[in-house]
Figure (cartoon, one colour):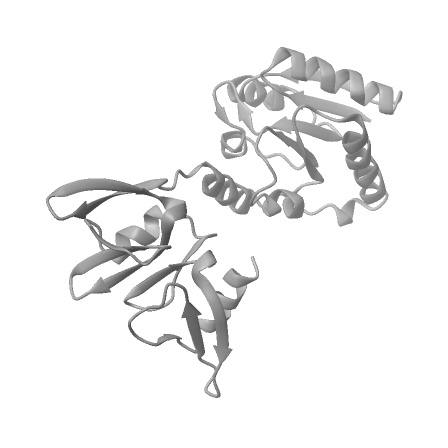
Length: 254
């Protein structure tokens, strides 16, 4: 089996090469490349390898840019320094993804998965680069960790884990803490949706964005709507529309 390694850290590349040949003496590491530019030239001049071990972050950018430049049909095992949070697209669209530093056991499992699928190459689905790129952009996006708030004639800040929910009262937006204290913030709800991590915050209706920890109980209504109870309590009953209820349930189960 011919394996191409794309890795910009020399020690990581050396370790990957050693582990591959230790796990399977029949593996031939045909080259080690460290940049998108170098890999682009390589693919124009060589036949595709049987398998690619591909670091997500190369010396001149994210590896996805390579797929914009050349057509690659070889199966891929991604390597990454990111944790497992929100990396499901890599599991779905590649042989596997491995966290660095590489572990011999995990690499062996990934090779075993490749060899099993390779018995019938039709079982190895083409990479969905768009979905993987979107997953990576989600990982890379920076969400707010704290907010400036107004309290009388003073300005304070509240860390994101102090926030229970945000709500709109006409055109005024309030941040409500876990203790039930209210503070003015200079954002509208649409902007807040972009700034808040969607794994933890959900806009249940046009007035309210809640944090997952604030949810105490959810009641199913006869018309497929949901009624949500939060702590500290909101001044009005909270309902999730029938159209939005499936999305809300997925969020709760995330």
